[in-house]
Image (cartoon, rainbow, N blue to C red; front, side, top):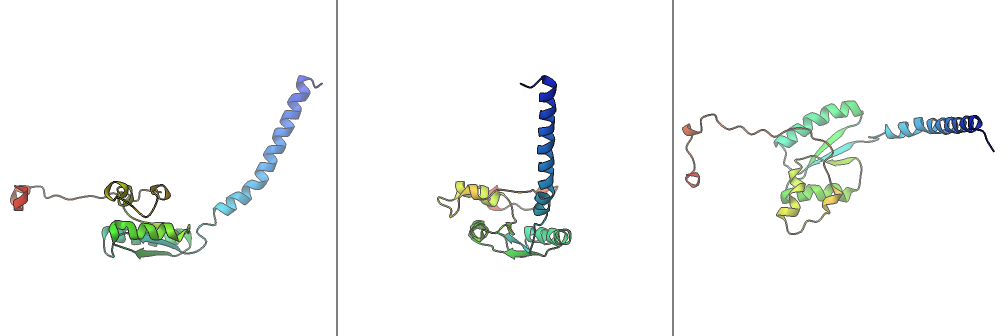
Length: 150
């Protein structure tokens, strides 16, 4: 039977041994996590060349490729309400291929289409990069309205 002081020393020794073993494997884990991207990254856009999302993606890709040390390639796949681009990303099954576009492009699909070729749980937003701003003229009275608006 151990006395309280001996048990405390053994617990402290065991905790120190576990901590030493854990820190021995920590640098290897961190080194593995920092190797992404190991090759070029493709950003697939559901919108055409020259669109606002395309211009924003190209500006960000230029800066990110300098930080990552890997090229970032923009690939436009417009059409099909964005479903063409989304299925290309999902079917690629590659962690170096990302979807760049408005999150409404895929979050609204289950509500606007009877059937989509992907499971909504397979795709989710990672980061918000920009906001969409709409500009309206300050004096709408100066501009003629279409007949359907009156």
